[in-house]
Length: 139
Image 1 (cartoon, rainbow, N blue to C red):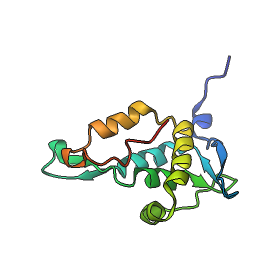
Image 2: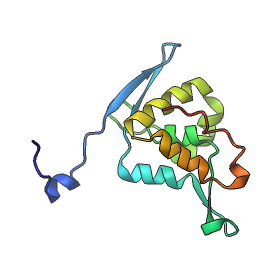
Image 3: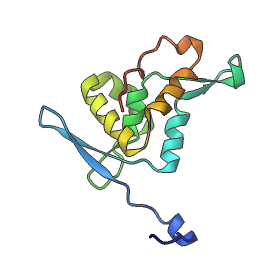
Image 4: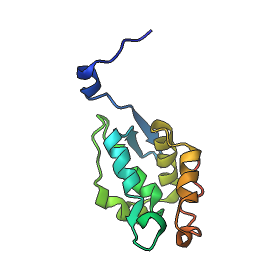
């Protein structure tokens, strides 16, 4: 049985799990778990204000994979290598198969379930319904 975490332990930075992903080319990257703040920022990047939309916001699923990848690609110590503004370049530069490998591992590490993805898709604005950029992301 574990110990009850006190305030000091709750506020202490956790060691985040880092996983190496190897590509068929022999190249590799590391990905890691996100902190709570990073997860919130990632989810916020999928929403934009739209006064005409119900509730005043709409889901923006474009570049889902690249946005997630930017939040998890790191060095072997777990320090992030990319900045939020890098996702458009990453999305248009990296192959879909490499991005998919990164996203699949990121989903496992960060408990992003198929149900979470379905909620994003289901709640997306009707104008986004035809966007399949996140439909094929497998867990």
